[in-house]
Length: 81
Image (tube, rainbow, N blue to C red; front, top):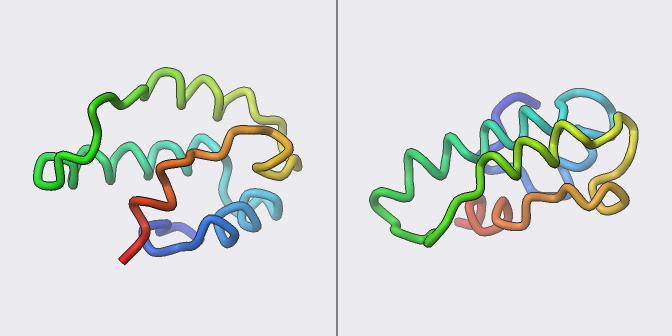
């Protein structure tokens, strides 16, 4: 899985658990989508990119998103149609 735009949170978590993508890549794609779309949507009052990168980098490989507490909660909102 490389493009995460329409992937469910469960599919993203499974891809991370399988090592197909890492948490930093998920955060980078999420932040890029926010940057592209939020100028039109105006959905965010604050985007804490630095904190997101720090948390993603600290996520040990092999942990599930729920156990690592690194789930980007906004991802579900961005991927809903």
